Length: 162
Image: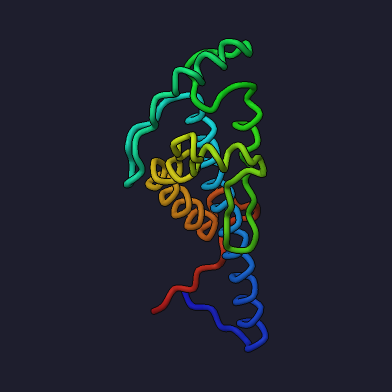
């Protein structure tokens, strides 16, 4: 089956395809960012092993454990006290870029370490751990959107050659 287009009709089709591709990209990045966000949030409070060149999380210092208990928190849940730092992890998708991060300075110190505290990577570790899931989600969402899976009104028209 072939379809003939006027120049204006072909331009309109290309415009629609571009719009659909942009929508698919945004949707795929949003879903992928949520995967990383969920993983990052789940890592806080639990020791993480070595991954992607990042060292395993160091055991909390005895003085930190004592301070946690004195303040009414559990003794040995690294990074988890009130849950405020964990809950500050958000996602943003703009154009063709997804950002997973936090505006909580404590997470920066936790992630990168300080003079007194070793780094305990949360965001980078979550991305590394979920890389395969992110790639799969972006691929399947993008292709599904372009072929009509989950798209209101169906797929983009496919022009088949002879």
